[in-house]
Length: 88
Image (cartoon, rainbow, N blue to C red; front, side, top):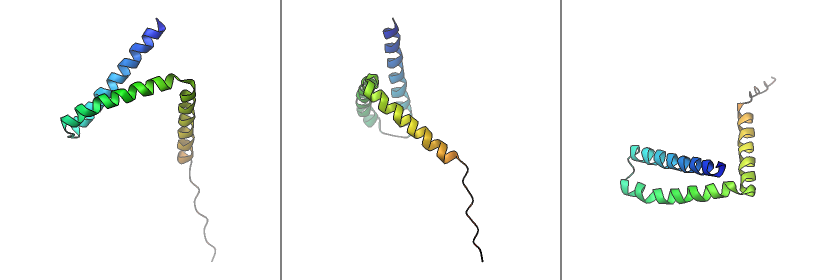
């Protein structure tokens, strides 16, 4: 039952991503033909990504990437030191 729940959540998330992508593309005046061509490619990419996230090695890479981004974010939020004044 737990596997079925994950499957439904995965499908719902993919559908939401495709819906948001379509909405944003149409609001940005992207041609409908281009959107129609891009949706199957994006869906295939999401399926591939979903399968790779289930892989332990890929999950580790994603975890490390998230940690690196968070660490970089903390560095950029740290207060910057004022430059030293020149002596005359």
